[in-house]
Length: 278
Image (cartoon, rainbow, N blue to C red; front, side):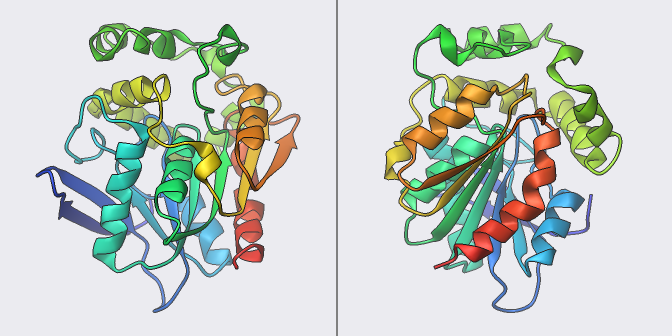
């Protein structure tokens, strides 16, 4: 992990929200990182490095149930995105770009839809598409047990989590190499978060198979969808579904990338955001 400033704020409903801030020069553009599932919300060194190349400050928020943020069972994607908006307002951020990886993708898009006054551009990396009620949504997932159990609600998902184990088939050999190299911090953080805050993952999965509380069609800013063609966690179809649902979306399909390998596109995606900053 890189050293960051930790923020802790009281939300209007009495919950506590934890955020992390890389800092930077006054007036530096802000990149809001929406973490995957599970993660602590702490900033990851490769994210900070990619943003720094573009001269950007990074802010990340631990979603409810993760990293010291008070749990909110039954939260929607829009609920969690609204929490991020509160922190950004508290920090005095008046404009930002949002990037979400995997489970962070829906939350990045939701913030863009909810706060067009704040968000100038959005990127998803291996982001999950809205659940459409079909079997095709689950197709090609190496391990869909958690999401399927979430269809029956929070209690069912919690019960599943008690005996759940990571399926190694979810990652390609290239994914594993990424976690042993440049994105090792992500793997370590995910392992720690899964042990310490399993309730965050439970609530994420339940939110993913329910209405987001916001429509991707409401995202009016330039949006980039980056998807790996070999992804076994969030399969290729999710990327094309998102592209079709978003009004102003480009799709970068990386045919040979898996779920972690696609993160190699982050520096280029940051460059895309800066180029599309109106």
